[in-house]
View (cartoon, rainbow, N blue to C red):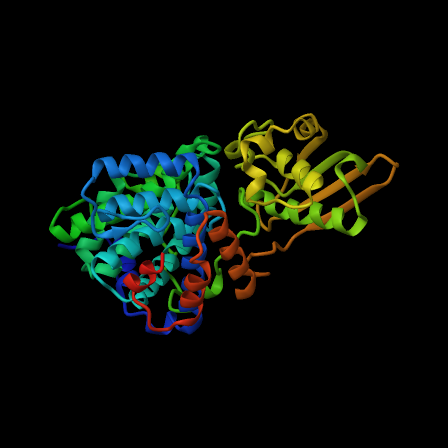
Length: 447
């Protein structure tokens, strides 16, 4: 079968050896991503969405399966394990981010890759290589289409992330180029995810679906099921249907080096809420600490941002923890009131505090005209004593420009494990950050 030019190039790019692009630094980045993703799943395991998902999945597969639940115990078939682990890892909105993608790459890919690798008793090295190759393709596609795609209302974790998961799984199980393209066609039959679900359980469902669809699509293609081989570039393909005229034609030009893991990096969240709030949170928390402020000292908060920076923040008067994760108003007032934004900040009772709710109206948001990139946020506090204090944040702590070090990541992971009631954090962190020779089954046995 003759493959379309773009899909042929993409398949060759993802399925190639890529040894020069997945060196020690890239492998370590994937290990960090896996630690962060598992830790977020452990922290999220008692959230209502996680409890419902686990119960539902176990009802579908009462006899278990081949792939472990990272946080809830037991095993499920690989598709269901990827689904539940993805939901649990994303429900707190604390998992890692990719700026080119405008979404969460690891939660879309790792639950699928790990489930297959465990079932087939593969080394973690194979997962690292598959992740690197898929992440590289993901970022290149995202640079071409993600901004407009996201602005139109799509949830990129559930769309672009699913495609990346399919590519990673195809690489992991050794599909040839034709079956790689079939897997993308099978995925296109299932692809969806809306930003309208932000602030509900369905947002984490969309992340879990990415892994489930990735597993299903790759394994069906391996078994001989086919799909459109022009699923991305064809006249009824992803580009035409989902991206409002995007163009992938040149995304693989100059694709030899550097790898996108080196070029773009992965961004580890410091705060457990939508990443769009984080620059403003850095600014307001710095102002609070530097000037010894409390919420009662502040009459009004003004947040200015680059064009489109707060598109996901759709809840200006949140009443639940999930809604508050998409509220710049809550982020600002809670930060001033508590001096920190933590996992406990998103208990429903914390969000509904009268001292918080009546102050939400004191936050004004102003979006600047101009370019979408580079992102920035500026916070101005009008104090009751007449002073005005301003802090601007351009570079984001935890981003590729200011990455969290291994010690900071370890502290975050241990906090997440503790929040989930698990004592296994130190062992998992030490293994992922320190052991070169590690199988997926050995890692999951620690959980």
